[in-house]
Image 1 (cartoon, rainbow, N blue to C red):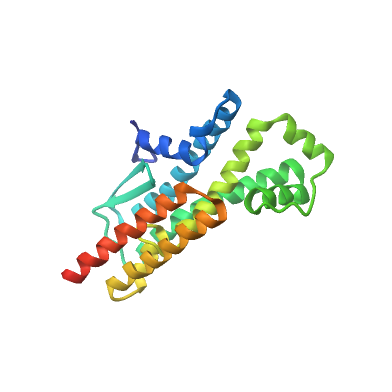
Image 2: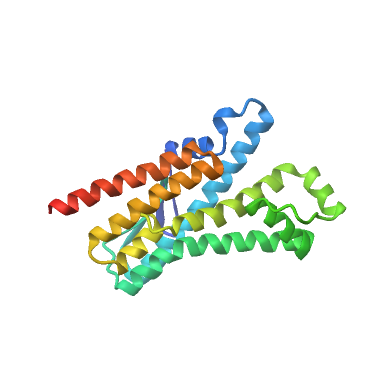
Length: 239
C-alpha cells in the first residue's frame, strides 16, 4: 500500500491496482526480462495517467463543490471522492467530466511531444498505428531509427497515448459507476432506467471486447459492471 499527499489531496494506491494493471498488459505471460520491462513501463504509464484522471475529478470537485477530496487507486481503476462537497447539477457535471478531460489533455500533450520530436506527419503516423493499428503510411527513416534505438521511451509514450485516449473513451460509456454512467444519471429518469442502460451497455461492451480483442480482462471488467448494475436495478425495484 502506497500513501502520499499531492496538491493537498491524500492518495492511496493499493497493491491490487498494480497487479490488475500488470495482468491487463500481459504481465502473467512475460517470460523474459525484456518483456517484463515493458510490463513495468505500462504499469508506470497507467499509474501516471489514472492519477491525472482522478486529480481532474478531485481538484475540480474541490473548487466547484468544496469538501475534502481523496483519491484511491484499486483493482478496477481509480476513485476520487469529495467528502462533504455540495454540488449543483452543473457543478457535478463538470466535476465528473474533468476526469476524462484531464486524460485527453495529457494524451494531447503526449502527441505534442511526438510532434516536437518527429514532426506532424510522423507523429500522426505513430499515433494512428498506436491507437487504431493504421499502417497506410510510414514514418521517415530518421524517425524509425530513433524509435528502434529508444524502445523504452517509445513504449512509455505509446502506452500513455493509448491509455489516455482509450480509457477516456471507455470511461465515457453510459455505465455506472464510470464517468459516462454518472453523467447519464444526472439526466435520465427514473433512476431504474440508468441501471438498465448500464446493464445493456456493459453487456454489449463485454461482447465487443471479446470479439474485437479476445480480452478476458474486458469480459471480467464489463461483466462485473453489468452484474453490479443488475443487482442495483433489482434493489431499486423493491424499494
